Structure formats: C-alpha cells, structure tokens
Length: 308
Image 1 (tube, rainbow, N blue to C red):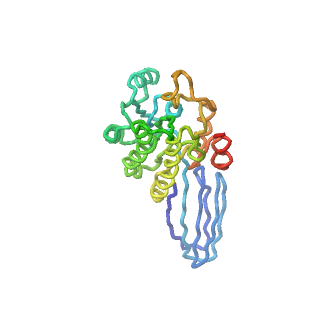
Image 2 (cartoon, helix red, strand yellow):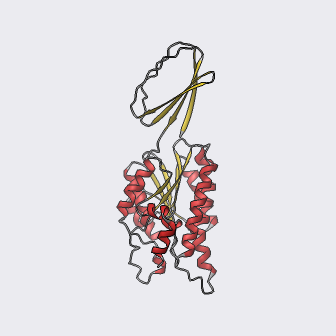
Image 3 (cartoon, rainbow, N blue to C red):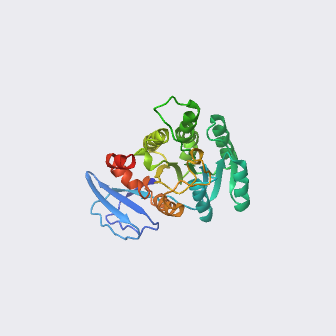
C-alpha cells in the first residue's frame, strides 16, 4: 500500500539516501510549478542537487503483500483450493483459521496440523456467517487476511421447471456469502497495515459452461463485485484480490457426480497454488491462473469451443 511522508527542506542541496526497503519508491520534488518525478526500483541509489530553496519532498512507499506472519481466515478450507492455501500459508509461518461445515473433516485436519485453527460454520447460513465474524474478531483480532473460497458447483437444466432450493444454495454460497463476509470484515481489515480480502472466482466467470449456468453466473457476479469492492476500498489499506482458477483437480462438483471419489479434473493443485501464490506476493490483484488467462482474453471464441 502507498504511504506518504511530507518533509520540507531549506537546503540548496539534497541527497537522497539509498532506500532501505525492497519494493517501489516514488519521490515527488515540488518547486513552484515544476515537478520532477523519479522512480526507484529495488536497490537503486540516486542523489539530487536542488538549485532552489524551500523545496518540498513527498516520499511515497509501496509495500508488496507479505505472505508470512499474517493471521488468515479461509472459508471452505477443508479440501481442494482452500486446504491447499491453508497448508501453504502454515508452512510460511502464518496463523491460519479455516472454517467448514464437515466437522469430521475439520477434526482430521486438526490432528494432521495441530497449529491449524478450525471453526465449524455453514457459510450458506447468514447467522452462522455473522457468528463466524464475531468469533474471529473476538478471539483472533489480529486477523488481517480473509479469503472467500467456499463454493459449490451444480448442474442445472434451465429448460425444465427447476427446484429453487439448490439454486438458492448455490447462489448463497458462491455469491451472497462473499458479499456478506466482505462487508462484515471490511472495517476491521481497514485498520490493519498488511490487509487483504481475497475472492476465489473462476475462469468460468468469463466463459460459462452451459450445463452449469448458475455457478458460472454467480462467479461472473463475484468478478464484478470484486471490482466494485476494490474501488470502494481504494483509499484504505485493504488490497482486494481476485484469484481466478482454471479447471483444477479438486473435489469441486462432487454433489453432481454419481461417483463421489471422482475428482473434478484439470491442472494439478500444486501448479495452481504455485502461480496463485506468486500473484499474491506480487500484488496481481486480478490474477487469472493457467488456462483462465485464455478464457478472459477470448471469451466468445472459447464459449463456442467449450459448449460445442
């Protein structure tokens, strides 16, 4: 995030010291209407000679997202992408909180990872979402990153009368829950120096697969929502990320498969995780991963290929 430090100098000569941080530093030198803009990157050292007195210097520093020493809440953290992120963040020295509705899975993960904090919560329930927020803020007030990852993927035939129950659940989990949780945590995150809200959407936000229309529509809405939230929080410390997975080999969509042991198919989870973590480290706020880049870039063309 950007931070500014104004200082006034009455010297004819001003020497800028070597930046002590790694990242981007921008120095603005103001003298009446003259503005000199210089960009420093990494370890660059530069000296200025000012010919006029009473110059003003504004030092703006940019700090990249830290991936260690955070406290992170991850929804849907009992499997797939959420669990992969949880385990990776634990390795990097973070305090990680996951929530899920499968108590037996949470208990197994707690045994496997004793440092992992687990909370039972059905993200589809608004009251439980509020309880989750209250618990996290009370017991882990240092929380500075919230990842909206929980999701379900169902097949829906829109040519027949539909059962609204599964439709409502799919929209509640994939769209309303991230909207709700983002609003519940936004004020708290705004008070943290290295804070982020990370929404996990999908390449299908850009190119829908027609037999999963509600899932794709919800992810498209989440993409739009993330853009708007990023704009609303632009003057705060909160970085709003959208990680956009391609088809990734997890258990996503198991509800619609007869064989519950069958996985989703797609790129290996570790490949997704490697690229996603690089995006977070480098502040790529809208980050399509792998083949999702092509889905975002060639929407109409890819729609016909994927729905032939």
